[in-house]
Image 1 (cartoon, rainbow, N blue to C red):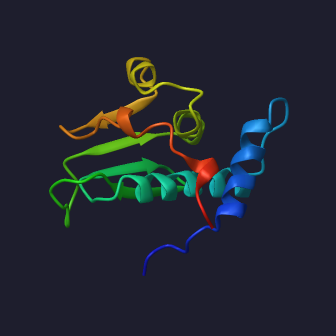
Image 2 (cartoon, helix red, strand yellow; image 1 turned 30 degrees about the vertical axis):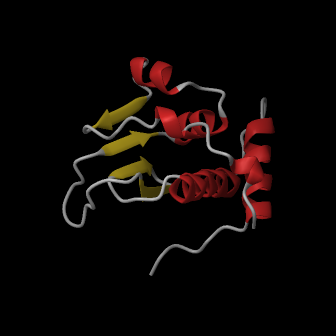
Amino acid sequence: MPPKRIPADVGRRAVAEALAAVSEPVPRDTTATAVRYLLQVLAENAEGNSVEIRVPPFGAVQAIQGPRHTRGTPPNVVEMNAATWLGLATGSLQWAGAVADGLVAASGSRADLGEYLPVAWETMEG
């Protein structure tokens, strides 16, 4: 069963709250919703199954056109923490810099998300 789709208004609100938090930590549920929503948007904008993007413990999606992966460890994997994903997905971090700084673990010939970031989360319809 596919994960439940996050409505755009709920997702955008969670992202805005997560980005606005400067001095106080964001509630875990808000962070989880923001991360999952931005992963959902990426998967919609870059449909496919050749790369698995993981943001533990909150979520993972498969995206980007190419050979479909069906079993075992995928050949193209991108993994990062929630703060890094939020920064990349919203444009406050750049892909090349995050990879160079070791904030992103990317393996495989298709694991470069640079052309798909930031995601167009503010314009997604609900």
